[in-house]
Image 1 (cartoon, one colour):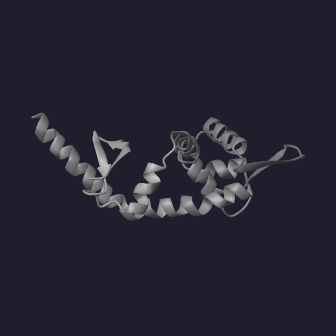
Image 2: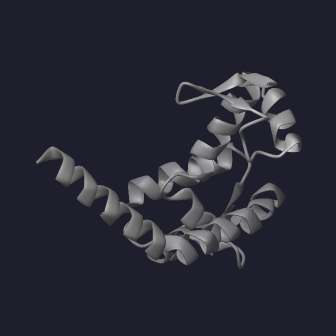
Image 3: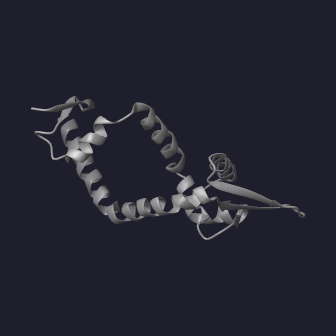
Length: 151
């Protein structure tokens, strides 16, 4: 039996003989680089946090002023919006444009890199909406089973 010993799963090694994982996927697993995983985790932590995805999608139709963005992202505080926008700007996903006026006008827009994120974020959102009820049912079933074991 040929085993792949680079990616343990819950104490079990993947094996081409007893797995439904295609050989092509196994070769990607074998080529897994921990440094690449850390990079992916770091990027996903930014784009996958509670507010970033909502902000990206709120900017999808073009530049938006700060207060309009705050109204568009339900439940976000001014402080959290400021922090998230700064982080997205730092990562090169959002640009900040200040127009000198009284008071100063500040608009936020997606950069080309931010625009490239719209599609995957939209697809992930579509997936979440499509599977929301299935996940809720699975959670209820799991919680019910856990309560039964605890008794």
